[in-house]
Amino acid sequence: MKPGVSGKPPYDDQNVFARILRGEIPCRKVYEDEFALAFHDINPQAPQHVLVIPKGKYVSFADFSTSASDAEITGFVRAVGEVARQIGAEETGYRLLANMGPDSHQEVPHLHVHVFAGRPLGPMLVR
Image (tube, rainbow, N blue to C red; front, side, top):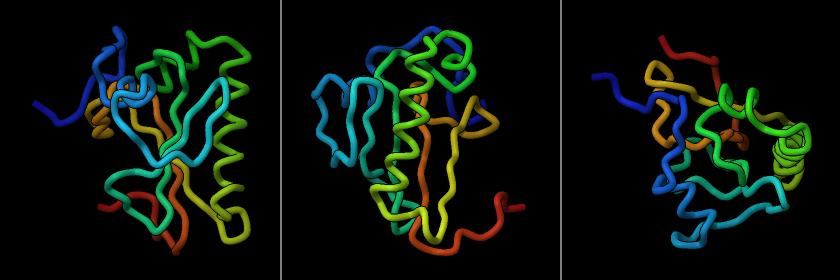
């Protein structure tokens, strides 16, 4: 079996990000509003590595883009941009990454966008 999760519904209420949203697991918060929560990754892959998650129960970007309301989509996209500004990444650049399904190695079945910054990040994919 390939590592990762399917990226398709149903939503698992016991996933780590659902538990963070409920306050059962602490996080190092960067940003929060009614649509999104952003926090530092516990295993950073760059000097700045922040996860942005919607507050709704969405498994992946595919699920979110077909099921979320216009307000949720707009709010989430704006939250990602605000996080990039707050961590000071706009001047030198940053990378966004969202995984979906086992081939991408999605590990948590809750939509999340990684914001990487703080150093030159190299090529997109390692071969």
